[in-house]
Length: 457
Image 1: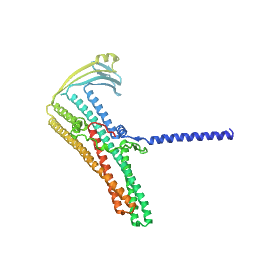
Image 2 (image 1 turned 90 degrees about the horizontal axis):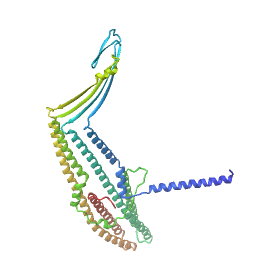
Image 3 (image 1 turned 120 degrees about the vertical axis):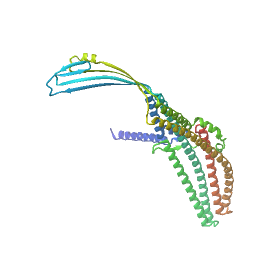
Image 4 (image 1 turned 45 degrees about the horizontal axis):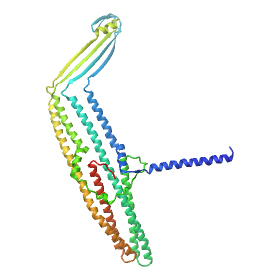
């Protein structure tokens, strides 16, 4: 290969490597810049969250328990094989050997024997305890499913709260950045006014301090956004190296002024469908089965047994005849009647009734907690909505006032104190307006979620 051909080869190889690197870079950026919607966040968390995966594993265990309890309805069958060796090294006489119905004599110092058997046991009736055990296992499985649903709802609410909080802080960041731009412009204007003798250096220092304060607010808001992003990322179980970016949803004022669902209607729906209420109701049913199960200990049990046995021994040369003559079968019927068990049954029944009462109280407590949660969301939505209407008007008024103060300051018609006070009032009003707006939106989302709707923005 000459020098010219080598140069061309190296040139195209470099181009090929650069193209591959560029494609890999684009693919990496595309993966890193995936924008997560609220629905995607919730679906991903429900599938990958570690606590939910543990709950699913518990569900599998409860399903296995159901099969195990159903298997108790079937008889148990076992087979046994036993081989033995008898060694009489010092015996000088013939030994008489009896094996089943066959008697023989052997002069061998070592004799071996074999026995074989098949046995079956079946509980015909034990007061219905086996069927009640199946019923209890089914209730446990249902409660595991409800626990999974409850955990999924809790994680969905946490994700929605973090997502809306991020949207709120992103909009607050825009407000702080806009005010920071105004502060910097005023500071530059102040330097010109100092040069023209229209402002003192102490007043210019106040403008500079205001710029620093605005920069601090921007950094603080960005830090809060990063903290909420980290919390959301942990809920999604994303790897540490993955970057998280949420879709910026424009929430207009109308979203905060929508009709708030009636708390009574939300509560009535939640009583019928929320998993935490269904779980308490299932626990009551399970406790009643436990009471019946404890009472069943007073009942007698009936069992049936059957089996076949056979054996042979080396004292006789006809092993087949031994096996034929020694083959035997047995059939047994047993009845066990409990008479006195040291008050164990009575204590078990009493404890089961106490647990039944506790389960009913747990249901009442869950219903009260549910109503309190719904009413809290309703009050927050209603109060935030009313405050948003007032604060929105206040922002418009203070914004106009601040613009007038800014124009007057540039013309030297007002001092720095009035300008900074106007800016502080405007910032406070804007932040309150945003907080009221997003608080109303979040609580209305939660109310609709308790009414059976999915989280969506």
